[in-house]
Length: 529
Image 1 (cartoon, rainbow, N blue to C red):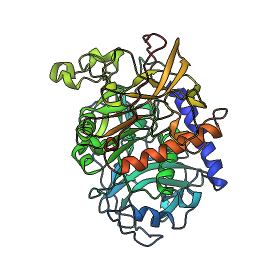
Image 2: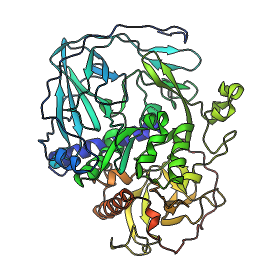
Image 3: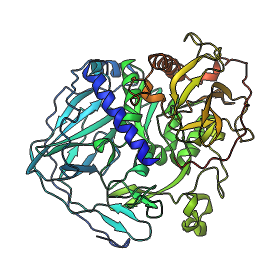
């Protein structure tokens, strides 16, 4: 499944770039550690005035009126080793310094930082650029025996001081050399923000699928799961999306939509939710994007506590909160190594002896026995499949006014992965099934899009399909684009975001009618997302 997902993501990114152009849119033992000196900071020539970040959403509108550019796009990727890099932070706040580690075959290279948003359809704004820097080709990655963790032990190439001219948002640091171009993603946070919406980059899931250096949490260099990593490191580049992780295909369309609407928004990563789950309580809604599969205990308990306090939760994908992880430090900082043994090798997880509650299996499996449906309403079932979405409850406030009726079909909405309200699975009371779509995936079944209101009044939405976000930009893979589906998905998403930004969505009564979960039996499916 990892290979299939990455091929699709590349196609999504390519399609999105076309729309934007048109104006629409050795082996190392684990005990060994190597300390390297920090280089001096590189001067930061700012290309735009400072942006004052206030409590209201107006700054988003003002920011997106600034001069945008399509220069963020990769125009010459070059060979795989042409240039590649990683940062020692997944996110940072103004005042922090971020080290970049860059390997290149070129004599010189430059870094350009683009904040991603709407910007009149251009998709990004150049915020900072470095002077030309000397390039060097750095050593190959190393593998830790036992866990097969792949990590680099490179010397830092430059240090970037994140200043007040870097507004909160998702940034692509574009590495530019004569031999090629790549990205390094970075999220800039505002830890004082009380914005209504917090958009979450799922970097733990990006890293789980990352095969840079030959291994991910799924596959090893021979293509088998036996040689896969049990621990993955953030101290390496991303292989997918020319270094962007999973941002272009599964997240950028939603970021563009939020910013085009001028909504009151701030940004962080799932690692930030892990570090400070209490900060979610000052926001009105958490927005999880297209593929947010890997969650630690602190992430999940933080989301559950927020729901209990009236914070809305929007899951705009499928397969969310499926795998349980632990995070541990690397030589470059805290929470830089991600542990997940998976059910088929969970017996090897040392947590069985030290803390069984932290065993890294699927959330629904022993010893955790805590299915994601208790939070989402539905739960992951299978992949891959492709099918139309079928409307089941057109009277829902989310679907009202979109022109759909019971039985209306939304072509190409479902897939590759999907969620389902499983008969007999634990879930909150009165889960509404908005779409109930027949699918075939190792047998006949249904994909469900769901909504429920928690006792606190918080609304919880689960799109239940991996194609929701790409539909926002009409940028799904070739043969899976439908203007009808794109229109309805956009309308539902806009309505969802606006109501969730207003506070507990259940404060206004949801539709009383319920849809029975029926149809095919809940067959056991063992697809590995």
